[in-house]
Length: 237
Ligand SMILES: Nc1ncnc2c1ncn2[C@@H]1O[C@H](COP(=O)(O)OP(=O)(O)OP(=O)(O)O)[C@@H](O)[C@H]1O
Image 1 (spheres, rainbow, N blue to C red):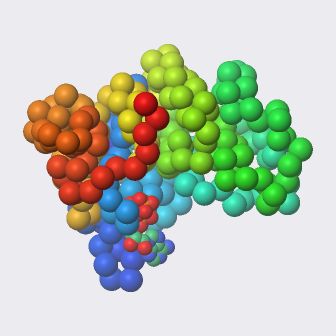
Image 2 (cartoon, rainbow, N blue to C red):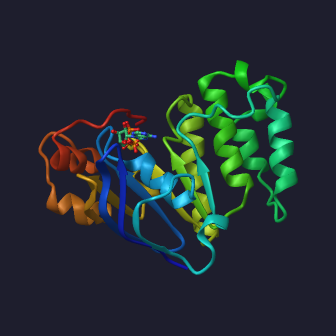
């Protein structure tokens, strides 16, 4: 099943954040969505998830899209007066077709802070919870907004390895926004670059590296620099 976006327009206060954005995301792939701050990446994910209504355009998927998407927000502020364990139990109760996520639970070390209220949880603990919930819902389309930010180095690496294994084993579509890419290059089947509200370019890392060769920055960082003139932050290698 392929997710197809055609001519998506979303305006805020008369300004088009998404300006006829079109892209296709085939199943069984992990896709990196790149773009400078304010380019509209989070807005695009929210539109796909049905959290934000787009003005015009067509999103098509084999099934009712809104039922098929789990979105991990860049920041997690919901259920502030519940404990982390209670939020997880709530989401478990909502999920009919749960899968075994022990590996993800363990690598995110959720057991260590399950008794903390969400409002008292650190940025990294909230991020860990939000990633876990996105996978717990067991949807065919998973959207992750800066999943690596706020996690410590060990968790970043382990999450990268988990994602790689998970996507190989399932036919899920995983779209990731991340400014931290060094060390994760092999995770992405294709890279989509959002600029001026449109899909400026997309392709595999090899295809884009060929187009945007850069003597200073290599890999995805070089592609991003070639497209935007900016340096991508974060390095785990
Ligand atoms: N609810 C809203 N009302 C008005 N403007 C908004 C709203 N949400 C987002 N915007 C604006 O839309 C633009 C795109 O925001 P968005 O969060 O999608 O960018 P982004 O590419 O995810 O940025 P970043 O990399 O900084 O997270 C920004 O100019 C932002 O201020």
